[in-house]
Length: 118
Length: 112
Image (cartoon, rainbow over all chains, first blue to last red; front, side):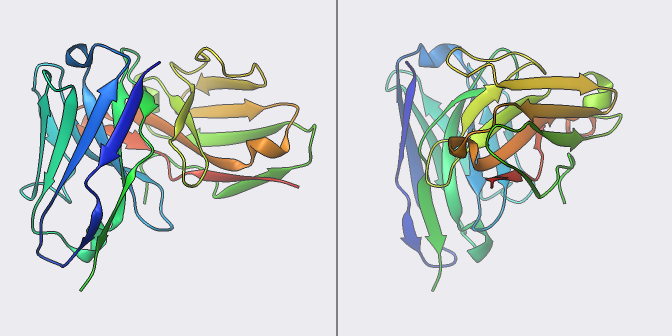
């Protein structure tokens, strides 16, 4: 059974940085593309970033392009999201999710809360 | 404003059948992209409910079913149970977004 565990969330001031991590187990991490998805308070799910199984392609939502960087370490079975120049509107629960061949996201983590506030 | 449109909320009594619609356009659902559905209870990991329009992952009860027609898709839940009260999201892809995915805005299911 696949398991994904996010960490690294917390309270940060506007303009600050955070690095989220997602440790996975239960599947061959290097074979799958991965996603970061977020849910702002009172809002629905929203795409943040995508990384292919070999590290490319990489996509970002327009709202985070140029500020966030997705990466993966297949040896450590970990997915990362470096978040710089954080804004209040980046406040959300951030989920990592595993991509399935069907185009769905078949396993998700429990999420980590990022709060951007002064 | 989401590319895929879902009703904000639906409700039903225990034992009843409810459906949740997901309306897209010719650049996403109508272009032939598959639709997937997720169940999300607050504070928990979202769960894949339906993939590829009408397929249930192992462990998902057959009370849940999906369908797709034209530019829309639907999730049906029969024999409604209190534990089904959650948010439900549809997901697909959009050719106008360079293959980037799209979510519906989500539907809150209330079990009366």
